[in-house]
Image 1 (cartoon, rainbow, N blue to C red):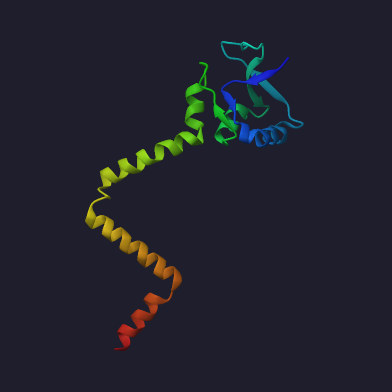
Image 2: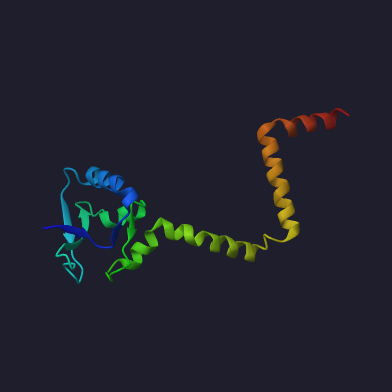
Length: 143
């Protein structure tokens, strides 16, 4: 009998890393499994959620660490939770969040953009010459 983790879709490029992750997490550990409404897939694999004895949710950890994709082909209890855990979803949404933040902060107005670019230049200048402000202040008071 084969067991398939519910909500987990393998990433071929991360298979070896995912297998090593599972070996490290599960070696010598007591585990327990839980089932969803559908207990077997069309290939007669047992579908389950896998937990460590301390209630660490292995399916979720695989997704959160980007070692697998979220399986969206089936409906299951934790589908929404898994989609929220997927790091790729955050990356896909981040431009939207940045645009929204700029819109509310009016961060793209020319006056503000100019100030920001000046601050960035000042920051890099101070990284190269950390004593610049101190030296300028001393020169000012000497004259």
